[in-house]
Length: 517
Ligand code: HEM
Image (tube, rainbow, N blue to C red; front, side, top):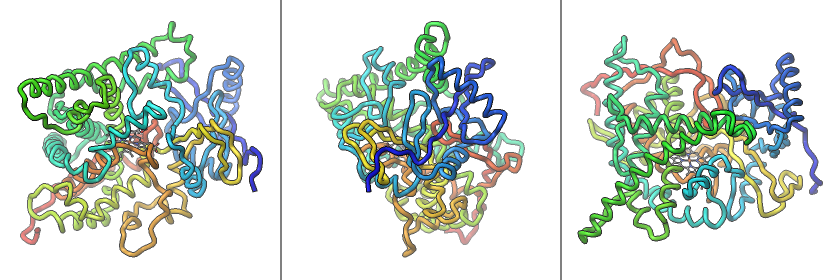
């Protein structure tokens, strides 16, 4: 039976407070988390903000003690699998069970949308820069994805980037050796978040720009460092920009800092793309064949204007760094705490990879445990813990409830992939659950870290390639052990799922024995 709009339970508005003593410190508190005195203070502030008509945003910057676990899992316990989140101007329906998630995603529209992208489109509109796959919508998005998907989305497409990625992995391993040597114990690498960010940015840049940008060198080139700083600046100041009303832009510095971040990102991307364009033109003028990988393909594609290429490359780049680096971080962290799983992985890799050989992209397909480790890391720490769908065209019925068109749904992936009905012992790292060895396979909607359907992640195959190739080689060379001073690491939702502290790891070199293959 379809019932008229009726909420299972109303969630109180969440509140975002901007600390006056620090521009960057933005606090988001889920009112669902019990903390009586805080609640009262925040309720008063919420009322004031509501009166002054400042929109309240949720899930942007969650303090350490209110991790993503507390939010999505707590809400599920208290409000059930379907509830309304009403946060000032932002209203959405939360989908917090695997069945409802499947029901909704199976009703994905022809041009699925994740909802409002003004934060990213405003700068592009100001500067007349094209939109990319992240920000574009409807037919134009579809056309763009048709071009971008080629050479990227099919597993056989990603194989062609194997050598490029392997070259970056080689440099990353050299850097690991260098950092170990510099450490007091001779095997410790500190601040893995930072190191993996450098690896990931170098990896995706070498694919997208078809050139190396020096992130893994001892001294990062100044231009590349400016680019890295610009990305950080854009992300940092996007928070106050979203939270503060537009009139503050003339009085407070955040908007300008945010825009400066974008300026730096596009300056670098444009330079790289223009250099490639010139090189292609030179070859064409000389009647020489034009050969290259992704950027060359896009630039030579008649359906892509250079404006489109600037827009798309910068979005691919931004979407492809923290996602891959944090996934690798969680995988290494989990392995460091589970010697048995690490041994199983070592056996899986060495069975295929004899001697000092570097694995090819095809070879990792014969390493089922390697793939299972990454899948399990993404289940436990889905780096994009929450996604959304705006059902724009049609009314929709979900779980027997009617929702009018233009309803936004938030998809609680983190909670769903920790639901013990879907994944028994959800807090245990068990890569085996993904092996295709006759056991019952998990519900395919239980863990969908790359999203779903035609709007799903365009970089999925590239990310997997980077993760598989890097992990196979690291595990072949080193036993990874935790740094006891770090303790248990929790996840924080900073739009992507990041660790709540600096993670250091010991990379203990494996002894080569005569029995080793
Ligand atoms: C472990 C790594 C990654 C994870 C977990 C991940 C996850 C996701 C998710 C959940 C979405 C939303 C999909 C949806 O709405 O259904 C997405 C979209 C996207 N991702 Fe990834 N991603 C990763 C790596 C990458 C890489 C390496 C690239 C670039 C090469 C990339 C580019 C994009 C783009 C451009 C979109 C927007 C697609 C669209 O709206 O059409 N991602 N990703």
